[in-house]
Image 1 (cartoon, rainbow, N blue to C red):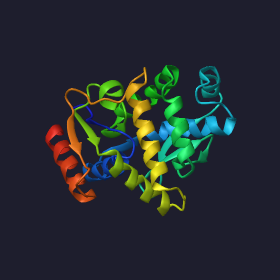
Image 2: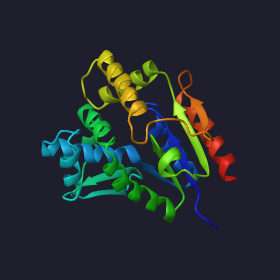
Image 3: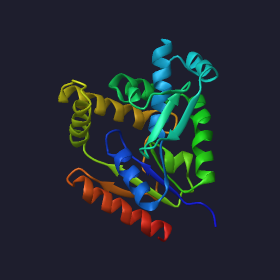
Length: 225
């Protein structure tokens, strides 16, 4: 019997990471946050002083750095850049902007896609991102498109940032969310869109627990659990 794969796509701040991680724990699947992989490259690009739109510079950097994914004693996914655990550093707003830029480069997506697909070949996975169900795992057993209004997503991101001690005003976060949506939806390479066979789940007006139960029900039904 082959391994099962679950693809969860959606815009920035929709709660994909939190909910996918919870569902993965409930199912006993490996959780893969693909956005964290792109953020790690974004951090490397920032540290190297390369502009995210500098395709040649970014592609050249790929051959000079090491990006690894692991899971710590806390059961959470950790990202490593040249051996350094950068799991917290990649969550800063400037890294998010850079990650959005570099993720639009076709050579970057091709390079990192191999890492993602290899994980799905070796174990049951729940993978979240922007193009998992449409590009990375088009034959996934279950596809979910998770979304919420820009205002709801901005409020959640603002709460998350403030909980980590990052001081930024809500309006700035909302502008960033809207701008990120625009870039992700209209980019030429693997734009953000709902797969035709994906189940849409809107969490604008529901809490975390209800959102989790909805996703878990969809996944269990889809994999026959």
